Image (cartoon, one colour):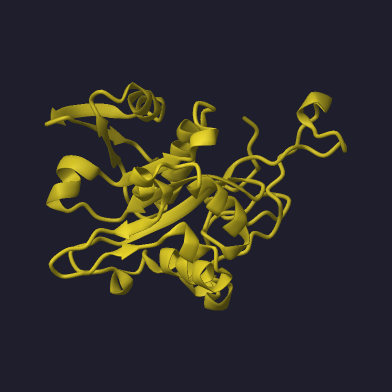
Length: 240
């Protein structure tokens, strides 16, 4: 898969692309997150890899949640069964004794202002002061091809006893219509430099012992199986 020629730090590509998540100080709350500076095109010398107009096709990349992707995000949400609301990104936190929980519906997010607020909320979850009690800061990124939403991935900055046993540092999901196309593998590989920038090396990634597809994704990223606890396989994946 072609990739943009970003620097090793992941800050920008040689064409001026800025499709990675910037620091909080450089984001504007009014925009609800971050606006990519370009379409994220990758160069290609083969005619078959380009579109009919001679331009290369967009290459999937990780971006911060932004209101401009509302239509595609909602189309993706519509593909999930109601029971998979968490994987669709509609459940930020379950209710606890200390927190009422944070859940959204597709009907609510169809409103532009609500969706902008939703994006702002996702983007502030890396701030410990913005995270509910008993939760950990997380970096949320979306996997997009051009403006098409394909999936989401999160980096939990810390491990609670439960996350050490079951959840790990990384959680991700690919919209149903984009599955079995290698996006989970590519998305996990792409997020590792972000985890490294947070000082996390290695990351813990877990999956059910019956989930063969997830096992292959984790192992393709260099994951080394430490053990199995209950039904969960626990892999450590290097980020540098």
